Image 1 (tube, rainbow, N blue to C red):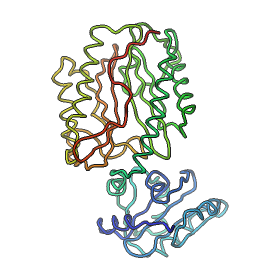
Image 2 (image 1 turned 90 degrees about the vertical axis):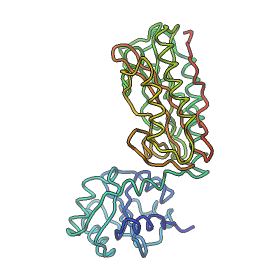
Image 3 (image 1 turned 45 degrees about the vertical axis):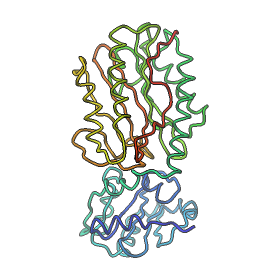
Image 4 (image 1 turned 60 degrees about the horizontal axis):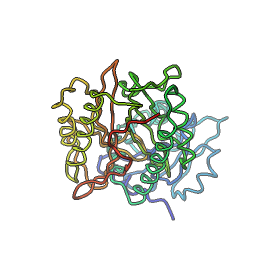
Length: 365
């Protein structure tokens, strides 16, 4: 079936520019239905507001590009010749004066190659408009997300069953990574966060080889599988051997905030309203000084994508949006707790795609 790029042409028309450009990444993969690497070789498709698209393709990718069923001009180039001539031919063929690009994805050298080929070309950042096409998930998208999440939850169950006092964070991390692939992950959605004790108070901690888990530690695991091009993103915090009264109270506060996110979510709510409700629970607790992060972010082909669930973002969430509901409390030098679910927005509420229990778990290890 020939490739349908009409929605990108529509974005160009809506923005009042002559064309939209995509480079390898989540939007490119979504558009062409095939995965291509982002490397030192520039690779680009341009979709005009009117007329046929065009592509600049490294010569060594041509046989793979045949699988795309792309209907439009293709300009290839070889490493030994360089890409300048291909860019000049592409821009001359398009005959455009303005181009919308993915500001968070297009690399500087590709931008410079376009400007070298056509110095008067106006290049604008249209990241929000282009990536916004991915916000409402299709049935196939949701199925892929569910598959990634189910793999992740099985891996988490295996990992928690193997935890023993005296293990290093790094050893636990390795068990988790191996479990992800054993359960069917195509890749990791991102490098896992495995943090215990005082490390759990750093939201983006790195697993330590020299810290060995102890009785009473919080153990925070934030990770996800990638399956069919889609990412899971899950966090659970457990306690080892026992949990202090403080730990139980902090955990209960975060759990109530997480549940508040489930309660208020429905189609038509704004990202601001969700974060205000969730963070409001944390602010009303004795632990308000431990708030470090917003409530969450969109989830799909990227681990972090629109919408960003934070105060001040008045973007409306339509049905089909998926976001992470991940409130947390973190006291540096002590411990942190985060509970993260992947939430599908529906017309009359929401569905949690994550099913792993959120109640307090104390591992007898």
